[in-house]
Image 1 (cartoon, rainbow, N blue to C red):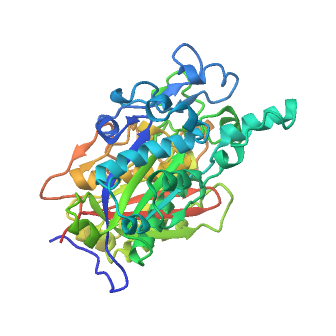
Image 2 (cartoon, rainbow, N blue to C red):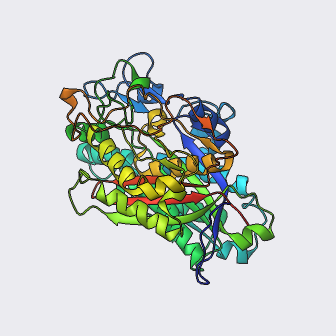
Length: 464
C-alpha cells in the first residue's frame, strides 16, 4: 500500500497540474523529457565552428569553453527564438532570463488549462513565485560598459527593471492579471527549489489556491564563466569533447558545466484541482530547508547540511527514510560536492531500518550530466523532471557515468578516500522504467547553493 502524508487541518494538500520548461535539451516538455531519458546532452563548445552564432567570439581564452545552452531555432522544433514568442516592442522590457521564464510559464499554464477566461476572484487567488540566481547579468555588464565609455546617454530607461530578479514574476503577473502573492527568490543554486517549496506553503496556509512557481537563469556569459573559473569550479578537462564534460559521480569529473534555462510548475490546492477536473502529475508532500553554517562555497565534508534538509523534507511529508524510492541529486560533477552529497544520501536514506522498509533498491541520479548546472533554474528544472519521474514511473539517467568513484584523478583533488564506495544505483546512461510492482512512490529533489543554503523537495505519487 502506498504511504501518504497525513495533513493537519491547517495544512492543505498541494498538487502539480502544469509543467513548462526551457532548457539545453529543448523548449517544451515534449522535447526535453525524451531527450533526457535517452541520455542526450545539451552541452556545446563555445569556441570554434560549432559555437552557436549568438555566442561566437565571446569566450576565447577562458579556461572552460563549454556550456549547456538553450538551442536556438524555431519553436516547432523545440528550440528558442525570441521573435517566435515576443514582438520587438515587448523585448525592450524582457531580459533573456525573463524571456525564458515567460515561455516556460506559458507552457505550464496552458498545460494546466489555467490561463484563459479566469474570473477576477480566480486571478486574485493565483500567485507567482519565480526566482533567479544572477538575474539580468548580461544587461548589467553591457550597461556598465556603455556607461564607462559614454556616460549616461546610452543607458536605457528599461535597464533597472530588466535586471531585477523579481521581474519574471512581475511580468507574469502583468501579462495574466494574477494578483495573488508576487514573490521572488534569490538563493544561488537553491533558488528554483526554494521557489517551488515556498509556493507550496503559500497554498498550504491559504494565501493562494494556485501558484506559478519556478526558477530561471541566462548566465552563459564570459563574466560569469570567468568568475567561476577563477573559483576553480568549472570543468576544464573536456573542452575538446563538450558532451562529455558534465560527469556527476564519475571518476573523471573535474567541475560543473554552466547552463541556462527555466522551469515552471503550476501548483494547486487539491480540492481546487479536483473541482475543475485538472490532470494531477504528482503531489508535493515535503519541503525541507537547512543551512550548512560552514563555508562560503564548500559543503561540510560529511554533507550534514544536505542531510538535514532531506530529513526535514521527509518529516514534513510524514514519511520514513525507507519510503523514499529515488533521489534526483544536486550532484554538479565537482570532485568535492558529489562526494559530500553521496555521504548525505547514505547517512539519511540507507540505514538498516530504511533498507528493510524499501520495496526496491534506492536509485540516485543527476540530470546535470545532460543539462549542465542551470544555477538558479536548476532546482526548478530538476524538480520538474522529478515530477515527471513520478508521473511516468521512470528514472531519469545520469549521463556520462562510466566509472562511479568517490576518488577522482589526482590533479582534480578530492575529499574522498580510495576505499569509499560509490555503490548506489545511479541509473547510468539512459533512463529506466520502474516495475509496476515497485513504483516510484516518493522521490526527493535536492538543491544546494553558495552560502550554504540547502533545500529538498519531496514529490509523491498522487493517491486519493
